Amino acid sequence: MTSLGRAFARFAGFVSAATALTVFLATGTPSWADDPHFHAAPASVREQRIPHTDENAIRVGQTSFAKNCAACHGADARGNFATNAPRLQGASDWYLARQLRNFRNGVRGTHPQDVYGEQMALIAGMFTDDADISDMVAYLNTR
Image (cartoon, rainbow, N blue to C red; front, side):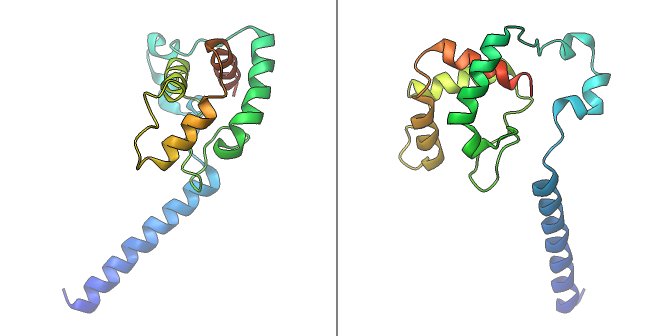
């Protein structure tokens, strides 16, 4: 292959990657409910996400999410590439609760080179007790 051919191949690969990134940023990744593989999974896997039924916890969690989380993670909790904030919608409730506690308690976000983790640790500090975290996770389970 000539050097011109190699350059063209690299350019074509770059354009494909840029197109894929543009589509991803424009549409976001599908939520777990839209994933056809989720519906084909055994019932034991599908039932791992047990929705919370306490309407008051969901209301409190929605207010907390809007105040503390939506600016970075998006109002729809689909994440934000620009702020390096991951998608929260569709994530496991146990995982979200554990990571928030880890940030709040200094297990995560303390490395001097982890700028985004340090920001998250400051925000997680606003969740003063586990009930605050549970309420916010209850809201996210409804998304």
